[in-house]
Length: 326
Ligand code: 13P
Ligand code: ZN
View (cartoon, rainbow, N blue to C red):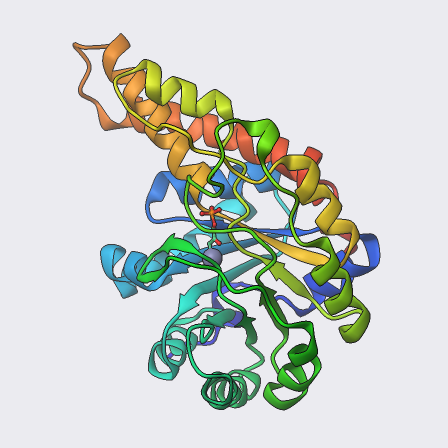
């Protein structure tokens, strides 16, 4: 058992307070390998942005839990080595049970999400509350979810989304004691977020629900999942180099920016990173058929991820340059 404090992580409390005050969103970037972790730390370090490094339960299994602890610690030490003074949280994304959340807290995570969105309301409350009790004794943050976000992320799969009911949020937050709340306002997980033919037909997110939730909760941290924008640039590279991603659309960047002005202070991005990796590796392999050094093809993907993260932090989330305020 180890406290996240010994590993050098921060919980999300201070990050969210400042983000709400200064109207930006802290990025929650998902990772499942070394190069993604390096890309996240360098991208956020170079843009002076706080960051929440997210590892899901299947990535935890894929990497191995001891390896996650030390790779996590490695993120903090790498940031120090490179002279980046940014707060870093290690977060469990879409945790499915009390036992898993507890084991991640014991492993050194500074923040956990319990995703009970598919459960009955009272059951979601009961489990979230139990996790909050365990987490808060250790100064760990807890993210909860109300409403169902469609699509596939990790072990969670939902074919339909159910918008968050704003009438439930105060009761839920008060009774669970959670530190932040993920809500469903029309985003979904994965690369196929909207069933439309062209980008111009993408509907607006439910900003009325977001505003209602915001009005009821006041300055309480709201989280937006399924927030990849599925950049056309990378979809085109995948398709040009032998892949096939048809009719994939993400959340327009303008809408994400707007969400940060209405109290969304954490934005989750996983698909875009996967897309960058796939695009760059496909391209590298076709353009360099005689190469077989993983540092080369993974390195080119890592470099592109750094560029994308810097752009997002600066242009979309507004988190660039904010680390010093936390
Ligand atoms: P995307 O699939 O839009 O990247 O969503 C990421 C996410 O919500 C991770 O929890
Ligand atoms: Zn999610």
